[in-house]
Length: 315
Image (cartoon, rainbow, N blue to C red):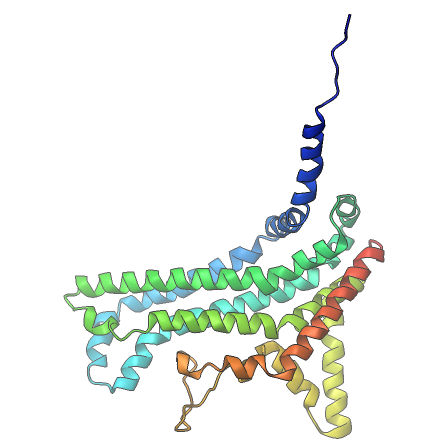
């Protein structure tokens, strides 16, 4: 009499052994990013709130839109164009600044928070490496927030165009004469380019904040901000120069001075509400030594943050 066998077929065992190996390349990273989004809702709530504030201001301006259209008829082409693009420029700048602030505070708390509440003991028990964890946290200010800014800005701009068109039609004004010169597609392309520039240029800044988040035992914000400010003060008093302050400004602006030409060929300044495609200089930006030196420092800071998370104890 034979007894039933509990052994699984060899081919089934092979499939089960191969499947986890194939999934392990990307699944832990993606789930780590999802974890950050679940635990830090401000990552997407803050940009949405900023878009809501911009839309509120835009709605308030709609009451005077018909009057503004009649007033624009007596303006020059340059002034008319500036009034058309200004609300869209304000929305883009507001979203970029909001994303920067969220990225700074998120990075400062990313590694520090899990040591403070001792949840690092739980997360270290999972089969997720320190490299994957740190890279997933670095992807929030460098990838996730920039993508959110672009998506929210494009959707907000389209809603603004549709609502403005409806208001003009209800007021008996032909919207074609107002919006036919609105360079919406060009604005979105410049926005996407600008977001990529900021993500690359600000990489060492956010990597530094992650490093401080993994190192500091308390007051991570002060440890991240006070040493650079002290260096600026010492340099100013000792040598009466401001090279380090210029470096900090370069990091905060993401090296946008190399990515854009803020003057026309005639020497006139470009209005920041609308930067034409002709003013972008990707070649100059990508060939600037500061970009690659900054990315090298970002890699060093992230590697140090990985090592700190591996050996640093809970607070």
